[in-house]
Image (cartoon, rainbow, N blue to C red; front, side, top):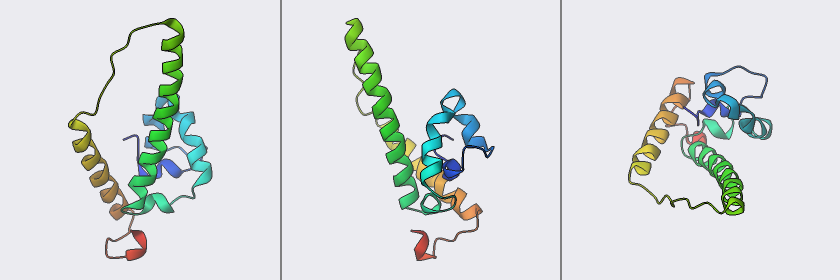
Length: 114
């Protein structure tokens, strides 16, 4: 529920996807300011790609900060590698995204929405 197509809503609008982010809700605000609502995020292919790219950048930035802290403290931390569950998670993300877009009134046969 973190990567809803409604992630593009402005910071002042109350939506469930913002609540799901909890204290990290401020991290979604730049995305909401850059992308207009029901724009690229409400497409069937480009939407999930853009949302995953945004989440990847956030994870990379948080990871770099965490790596710096761990390095400064000389801690030993196990490295996490790709797990097969991630593929199922991506399938769930794309499926939920498509359902949301259809429920918002867009249809798969409208090629502009791809």
